[in-house]
Image (cartoon, rainbow, N blue to C red):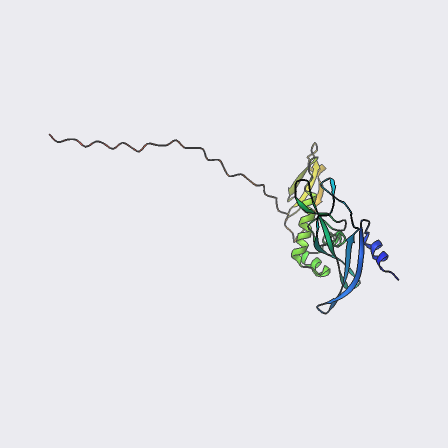
Length: 221
């Protein structure tokens, strides 16, 4: 039985991507499942609104949901393209966010655990990662949620929230009755305000002061 179509369907891999091979490997007395992904040759990838041929490849790996009791990883040689401006950029993959080392499904399960009331440390123990990496996932999604604010206000408030929470409201309806919760309050997480980068104060030029005139000594006659 060919297992590649089963994993392709389960992971939602679509052309030009495909699963090259699936295998188990013994790592530190544990069996881990590795899924190698690749792309079809001569594929042009979209980057910044234009399609480019492959310039070179960069090896990447992502932690995925466990396969039964085994840790599972996706990996492969991910193409980079050279833009018109001469920048060499890594193309986005459909199974993970840019810059993340986890698949979307893995991150969604982490977020579900946190939303259900689990602490970052407990979620990390359940998922087999550190609490610090759980916070990294949370920060990435919070930054994404707060990056498009053209049509609403965001309010960081401690109303019924000791560690603060984030609310949103329309630009023309800012009353408390119109607030909608975006980031709920958590006893173990402090919602901090993003600091704006401030420019150093401009020092006004001071007029030069002439040194005081010393009295001329009197001549003796």
